[in-house]
Structures are given as C-alpha cells and as structure tokens.
Length: 194
Image (cartoon, rainbow, N blue to C red):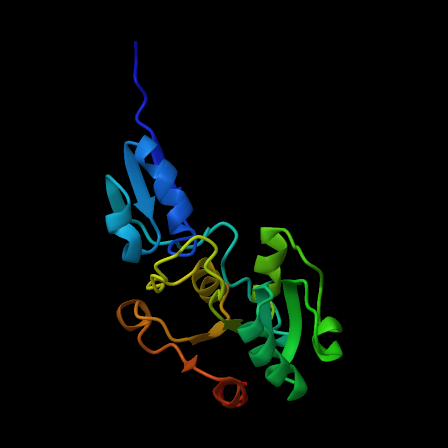
C-alpha cells in the first residue's frame, strides 16, 4: 500500500478562508498565496502566485491600448474605472459583467477571455490597472489581504506598466510600482504614465 502525499495550493486567500480552512486539514501540505491566513490552516506554507513564462512575456507587440482591466465588477472597480474611462484613458474591460455607466459597457470585450487571450491583451497594453477584490465571500473575521495577485505579475511579465491600489506586499516585491487610493489619483497616475 502506497500512501500518496496530498498537497493543496489555495489562491483566493483571505477572501475564501472560512471555506478553505474547513477542507485544507485533509491535505498533508497546504500552500497559500497570502500569508495573512497561515494560522488558519494546518501544515501551511506561503507560496506566492506568479506567472507562466511560456504565456506571459513581452512579445514586442505594438502597445495599441492605453489602459485595460481584467476582473469581475464591484463598486470600487466601477467607480475607479468609470473615472478612467471618462477621461479617455481606459481602452478595454474584460470580466464584469459591467453594469452602470454606458461608457464602461462600450469598452467591455466580454465576461471571459481565455488566459492566452488575456496575455495577448496585456502584450498590447501600455498600462494594466489593478484594483483589489472588494467582497470577502468567506472571511467573517475580515482578515485583510497582504499579497499581490496574478494580474500584477502577468501584466509586468508581458511588458505592461501596472498601476495598483496599495497593498503591504508591494513594498518588498515591487517597491516602485505606482499606486492610487481613489479615482482622482488613478486618473492622475494614468495621465503621468501614458
């Protein structure tokens, strides 16, 4: 009888921690992309997200898009992206669904693109916008996020600039990355970067 070593990599912490901590105990090793929830899992280790170098690389393509965003819709994203779109800086949106101002609906390329298509968009984009998730589906303690997400790594690997809401891990991984905390700052950063 050969017992297999079971491992799990959780990539939606802390947003889903109440749910993931219920089943992570059944694995021998647990990897977590955000160390803020390490104490909630047995045998847990921090393993940050990154990118796939066979898909995410600077292909030397013309940067035909000023700025873009890929992700689900939420109130914070809606507010920030509307401001960028109204100033003419936002070229596309993927995800959503984008309800609200028609300026966003017209920029939507759909709810889903294959990851290779997203990489191709990033390779043609000057600035990728990163706005954190707002909703914590299973995080009753409201543990704040610490780590960066794949969007940042993937966009940078594709040669795009990234402007992001601030997060603690930025200081140790990408200390010079431009940040914003409100729509006015996002627009100012886009104006400066573009």
